[in-house]
Length: 445
Image (tube, rainbow, N blue to C red; front, side, top):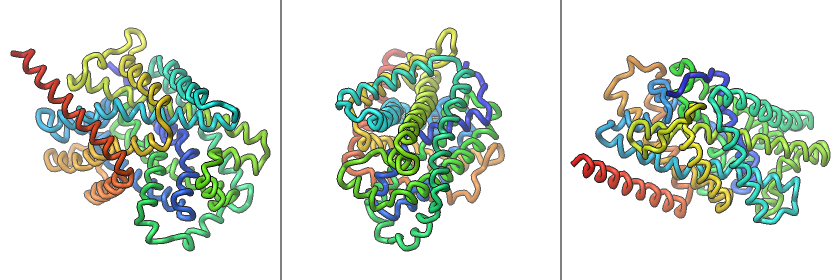
């Protein structure tokens, strides 16, 4: 069995390094490219959705603190002998696709910033770097959970140092409040309700994803009824503040107009490196780029750690393929699940581009996982009441309604091609689910 060894501090660290990753460094210029001066509004919208959704995750995570997170929540909400079997299976089926997509996005982002250090790399060499990163993280994760917690803390120190240096640079430059002063004049209601704003929010929300990683590790968290909600809220508030300060810092040194022109012309993907170069020179930019690569590795570490527990938990409950239920004989971690996800992530890192992956990640999760859980909370409250809940979300049902509406908007903004991809994956999952069900019945007979 998995052991409860992760403290509040360690679980929050793993949450936050999952959230940060390469995302904000890669998506910051993309957001400015979409909506120009309204970029801060998109980051605020991402923080708001993350906070609202974290209330749903906190209530479910505290009530069902088991490995696998959403697998357990969906199974409990929709009934283990009813729709819950299908919903939880679809979640795991999609996880086997979207978790490697998340890992691949971190690896591709790593290789993108790696180009600042070695700009002459060919495309195949960039892909080789992405694949090598996945292999390296797999080796790091192939160990006991106690060691994982310590490695996570070490990686988090690098994340804090990187973000801290970026923000300090903006403060020292003396004009960090300029982007805030521009907020009223840059506001446009037409932009706010536009498809472009939705696309920008897709990118910012991608950068916030990971606030729920602690739920995937629910079976390994000490005092989960209190620590799981605390970990999520600390993570969301902390990262939101860091992201907003980072955007303000960069916007005070490099104007959004200049960054938007880079995006429109398809050049200069290394915004953070250029920012550091303007403040402190080329050497500092090189050091900052290395630190960003450290952050990307930290995020990839947390992502694959958390998601490797999902197929494992489903397999232990008999809801997924049995081979995923195997634990390492001496190190006591789900090594088959880890190796399968890492293997698929390796392939994805060689096949896809960053923009394709970000929208795909969100589309895969929104309907079954995020909206499914929001509806599931209401079902569970109606069926079981709230007396035994370790954590009750405030202002219920307002957070649930807000989350559903906001996720529907984001789902629409992912675009027709990505929505079609989601339908294909979900449809194939339904087919496999019923084939497994028929096969089991035949074996019994």
